[in-house]
Image (cartoon, rainbow over all chains, first blue to last red; front, side, top):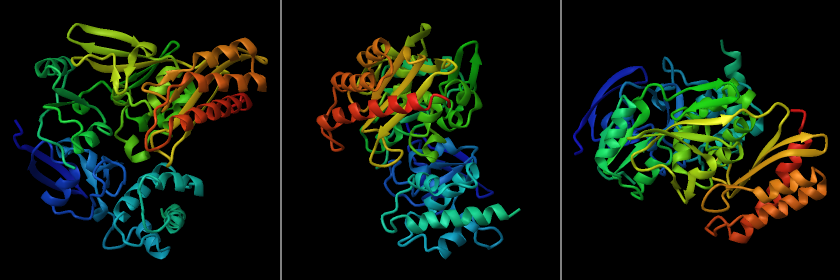
Length: 160
Length: 288
């Protein structure tokens, strides 16, 4: 009834193959089958956002997607944010503005922010607050997260 | 927090999908965006024998304007509605409401058809089907049928769809030019399900209201049209006194339930306050 299904997908530009039961969640497939543990499994029911990845270019919660749904998909995780060993402007901004404390939500924060700044490159503070409510942080109180996203937005606009 | 075992099918035609639903005789669930179904399966509130995944189905993802009707494929992502020029122009109330549906990462996956078929009474899209007087097209073993908003929502998480039917299209009459509209909701966090939500569309002639449509979510087992409040506005116009009276009528019409988010009385209070707020906003922002 639950035979293993072949899954071929691209993660951070690298082709991967695996086999999984239909009930395997995408987050568990990434973490346990592919060993990409940067994506965190928090609430496991689509509320906290720690597991957010880019699925075919759009942010999505990987704890409420099945691995089989990712067959043929292009995924980007937190491990794929750096380029040539250099931190992404969002990572630099979270570092500079101290936009994290325990860091558990940070992978989700960064991926959600990346997608948000793509659809809204120069957001107001209110828009940033609304967008970042997609990911739950229990440490920071969000002040520095909002500041980091605003700072990254400015830097990313300057960048070609 | 992991789903129980199930068989997985990703059909490439509607005929195949319907025959799978027939074969499983009520034990299969249709997977659209999965933003409600998969969490329920993770909690094992739902443990279907099989999933029929519509995500590999071509031709259920479209937004088309034909005459005065906007037709939306059931698998159209909420995110696509949010940025669609057709929706912004012909159904601006829907565009405003979409921003209240979850968050950008859930709207990337969540679909209009899935949200309607799931029929959470606190969700925004079921309320939109009511206030915009939409209808859905269902495809089953006997072919297609059209179900109007007023006949679609039966009870908590229950619609007029049978276990062998798939919601394939949503239709809305385009909002008339010059219509005034607004949506307001109260939730603990932006993007959460509404504790109470109210939406309105008003057609006006000076200070007269020729047609009023109001609906609410979060205040009962199904999203509700507020017909008594509509009648007040259509009879008495858009004065502050009429708005107050309509808000009272809304509070009387709802049948709220109590849960951890608030008492029934709190929700009734919110229906009164939000109805007033929505109407004042719609009336003031007539020139949008």
